[in-house]
Image 1 (spheres, rainbow, N blue to C red):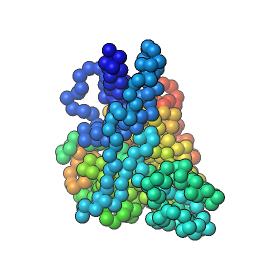
Image 2 (cartoon, one colour):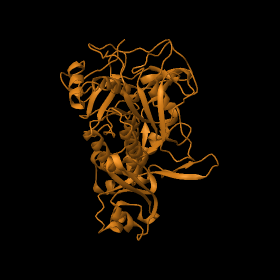
Image 3 (cartoon, rainbow, N blue to C red):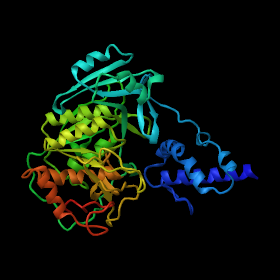
Length: 455
């Protein structure tokens, strides 16, 4: 009887945890079609959930159960409830493994046995005397940073061991090499549409086009798409040349900004776009961007003298990325980022959650919040981002949903304002014209309110 009770209890709590973090309902029938993110990405969510289960299931079981202490002590360890997460090997076209992603605490993903250091030249020279392999040394002059990417042994691949090896050098920042995800999902594949349905706003931005210089940190772009034929785009790649570079997400985001067709009206038709390609193809359905590529992209975009940088990606906190973004903000350049599509109960995602970044969430045509959108005190604005018609890599158009699709709206609005005002003044102006949704004033769902393009 005790064994049966224990199994039922463990299974029930695990089911609740999985449903909560995968954003599936506990009660009622599953929908005929799973909402986005698409079904192929669900397995990745479940893999991530294992790490949350490891940290939370034991406490949850003990709090929920009643009975003798012996029963609680006999509950199986959370590690036995799900199999170990298999490392994700990133291969080139020849099938050779170039990188390996693994999950760490809290479900974040990192490049296995890789760490990033923020250091000076003297500290860099001292690394050669330590049992590390220095994979690269990257000066980032506009960010005033010098980084080293190192590989450690398997037994040293933990913070305490790395810090112990570096003891006495006084290195400013030691971080894992985190990876980040795009924040949009296809809602209707391989189809063209007459137009997108967008909510109306009380006030919209209508200033005439000017010499806008916009930065985009995303996947590579499909330059052969006819919808980009009249756009001015300069692309720089920060992905290792042997890795496959995806095109879909960056093309869709760029399609919102400068794409043109009979059914797509660009937000910034005459802007010059400087696109940083930072993602490699992980598998058939997902992509990853390593931290170092994001740092290099930010440094390059500062050199290109952009006014606003669009980052429709999200992931873990990283001290090097935080420092770089603070420097970008201090130079008067705006960074607009997708708040994330992990669900209303999810923890904050970065870079959107950093104070120096403008966090954007998404609403649908009825001004309802996107069902997968993150929430929190860091949300600054919402914009149309559900069932949006934009460009598809390979040609044609399709509908996309996600906070990634909302972010370009704020990028465009802020860029217009910054033609004649500082970043701080431009933000104040957007707050003044934002349509307040939900509870009066700023809130954790809609932030300061809705900014929408002209109909």
